[in-house]
Picture 1 (cartoon, rainbow, N blue to C red):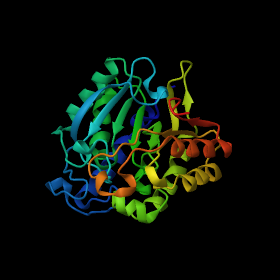
Picture 2 (cartoon, helix red, strand yellow):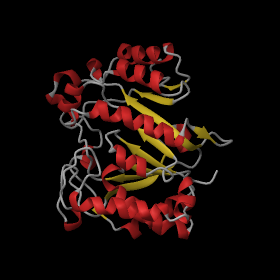
Picture 3 (cartoon, rainbow, N blue to C red):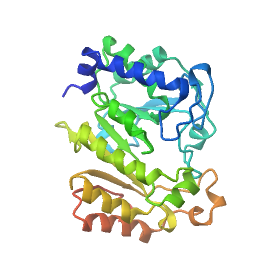
Picture 4 (tube, rainbow, N blue to C red):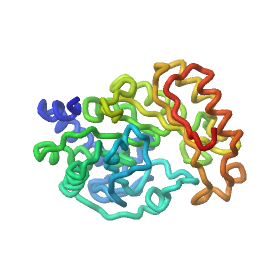
Length: 305
């Protein structure tokens, strides 16, 4: 399967989308926060990122879903800054403290090609939301130089629907982490009271663009939607409502990874309800409910169940 962005590039659509989204940077509306700062002139908004992306690290990642990792790893690029800045973020040094070095798009393209040449099965952007303009420009540089593996949009789900719609035909794999279904909790922990209303639309659009997850003969992801859900202690994530939405609005064979690796990081200990790890029973309850709904591609930890 040839990644969609190859044809999108040949038709000139990729270049057109890049120009349209670059134009948004002068009064930034790339995400739902709509900070309207002039990032072209170096002004920064909530994501604390100016014109160019900042990269924290890049490597062949073997800790992702097996469909992304395969034999040779997922070519993961971690970007500094974030449009959520969750109080419990496990990568807070990157997302909240903005650790990383600024790179131009040509350098980013070189990194992508390096990861491909190293044997990685895909280019996994974490988190692409606020640096999508840099990513698109880098892809434009990289395609004529041989980039040909799938691109993964690995995000927190807090996206602009208008932007995601424009990305059709560019990203073959979407991987949103659906965090909350409660507005109060979303505001308390991620400063995003409108999170649930937004992520519902985003899931439907991502599914429309790419469909259910498709893999090659070796089980490596080629195209489709992978949903993540990190179980939080004290039921804070509102997992029941999230799973109900998925089963009612997406195919029953939608891929969903129910993750158990929450640990209190960054500012989590300031909030009693999330100041501890989850229990065996909390995790088991979520998995059993997902299975009871008839969801057919539920991925969960065998170490706890």
